[in-house]
Image (cartoon, rainbow, N blue to C red; front, side):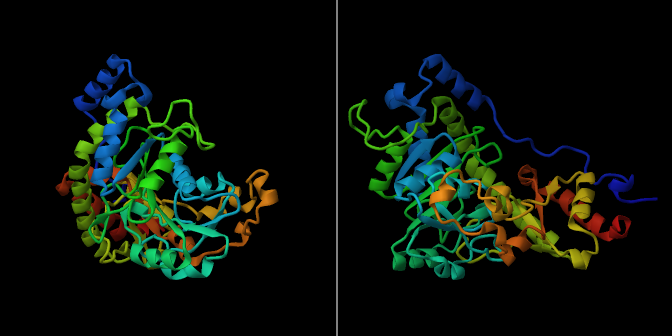
Length: 408
């Protein structure tokens, strides 16, 4: 008789995992108050604006002096790029193991994403490879703190300083993550956060621009506010900009979410450490890498490295078996960004006629390619379960591994 659930055996886990997002009466009351106030947009809410409150409270939480609340994380990236002066034909260095918005925010400005390979263990950009990618067109470096693991910021800041480049942190996964004790997002010149539906703090959508630089904060404010400047007349516009303002309903929800973020982050961290220890002891599995400067890992997109040769079955088949056991898993990103048709076919509109883009179709960055082949991602919400429930995950991995012959 088969032991694995995928072949008709008994499932390891039959109960559901914590749902996401988590909400309670706080969100209901907060949204109701905004609706009943009649002030749904920050322009008309005055000093009582939830958007202003969120900017102040979240910036303080992330060790930043200034925050600008915007419609989503993608908009935050575009605004931050504009604030540091990225323009047509400028190059921005980043890793290809990230969500597409990291790169499309650059393309939207008719600038050039320059992909540099990742470290093989952390999923972050390899700073040892950055300097070789710098040209006279390079304007900025965009370290992506993937999965809440801080990049090697000192190395990156040193390179940027030597070459006069801006450092824009894509900290979309960085709510509370720290580098040498400092929250990510405002360690470089400017940074961005996402509050999209899958994120650890969410209102369905939303984003934030963070910085410690007053001038950059003013520019970010202007670019998200149709070119207006703080304290200037309403019908006075200084930049060619768009409307990326967050609304009061979104901010109200996020203020409630912020009150739970620290406790939830600690739960994810502790459960993640336990899984690293237990799953890392199973032959064929290995935890993601961590560095001394990663003083707090937030563990978004938690994963294990999978050695297909050692286990003896394809990763996809192994993941299929885990899902059948009641453990929500996936392969993560199936390929690096540069393998998307957007890049291989240079679907950049007329910008492709006036800007010299790399031949993305011929790219093959080995560590980024390998990262797309050897990871098993565990669903984010699973790490919010009670600590003892992590044993269900461990038991399922052990069960599938012990009966892997059923999958051959």
